[in-house]
Image (cartoon, rainbow, N blue to C red; front, side):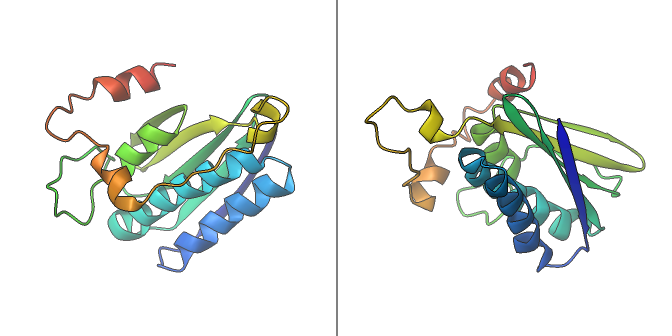
Length: 165
């Protein structure tokens, strides 16, 4: 198991820096399949740190046998929560996106701060594909992705099922 971490200031420029830290680290380890999902999700969590926590935050990447765990820790005592939002809201979808793309995720915290963690598969699409299959790709626009969230019927059950693993 290998762990690397980096701390970022609560600045807008830290969001792409955190994304590149994770993407570069995972592609450098040959984990291209995990890199896209992990970098996308760390962008969401880093954005939450900059906008809501407004404290320095640390991104820790833990390479496991079959998964990559990414932890984002800040020192704000305000705990993260999944929000309900209207169709015209510009924020409030980050943790739902994490729940949708991660194989597992969770939140831990106390009065000294919190850690939001998620896991993605370490198996690359090339390794998962049968011989002769093309590499997997992600080709969806933002509106299609956002429309896939069922705000009216959201009960939290899907999140509980994902985090119980």
